[in-house]
Image (cartoon, rainbow, N blue to C red; front, side, top):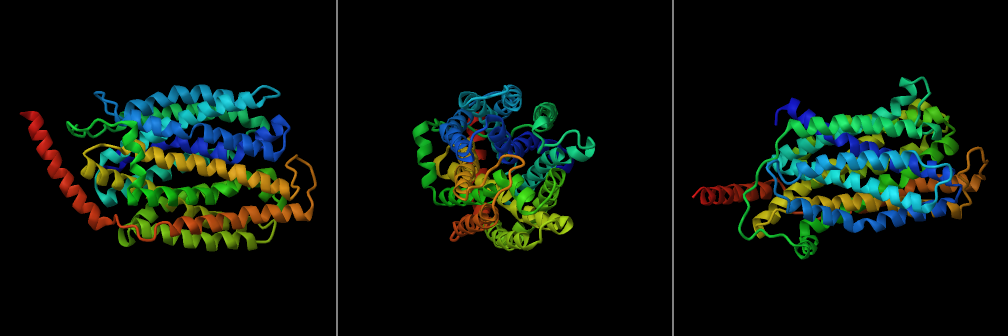
Length: 448
């Protein structure tokens, strides 16, 4: 895929990464202050929200796989996610003065629907563009890099606006919502018109049913990927909802500095994505994920050891942590495309939509579990999230433990899930050769 077209296509990742940044880091503390409730209640509410839409991704994946239009299976769904994003972002980022849990449930769920339509549509569409093992690492690497670059723009807003707009400032949330809607509109339209969806021959036996998809998880390769992805999302995700608390109270930074420290984390993803893709060409995707997990544990420990108030040392540590975390999303999603080929060869059915639904589901579940688990633990340490409140040393110690060590444990478990993974480059080449031969026969039969 030529680089200019790949860059245009990768712009389509920006809306999802902007939503990840806001829902993972800034919106939970915003609603905690807006609704005036405890961290346990906010954590439980967001956790229940995620559980409520667990079946959404599977249903969307099934619908996408069974869609037939002149422009493809997945592109129409991707484009349709844009108006859903407009409405949900407006409502979530512009709540009434005293929103209740019903308001939060209703519009947060619609926001998750928009996110799912954009992520599933874009990822499954990308999987159809190329069947080459290493090209997929390159494509998903650029998709992550461009997506993270777009979301990092939110972290730069304090600098670009002379501190008038900042994600950490509750008063800026409505304005940021409008920014997300505007940027997403441009990104989606450019991506939509940049690249066509590669047609796949429709076999006579291809009649996907919901029942078929429950068997997908029993595929050994996909089972390992889903388990690994859940823990690799839970790891960095465990630190996201308490990021503001940790760097303000444990590390002693101002709200402006806290926003700026997300920039190296995001910038690292931009640089790291193509580098991890190159490393994967030598080591294989699953071994590269395991290597990244090991280095992540080391870098996260170093972050804890950096003395409070040292901005540039913390800046460098955040860069190193973000560099490692980038490998998880890039390579797991490239590996899902390989599993989709394996399943199409063995079953004759195209299941990219539901396969990406599974890893999108783990991403949602992982981020929600992080909030649902970490916030109650902070409550156990008697940590109070109210601005201006002076927490006890014991509460701050609990905050530090949650931020630093929980992610390390979870990432190590996720890396261990890939021990014994067998779908490497050699096996993928064999699968692609068999699929190309099968496709040629089906095209010839259709022509007759």
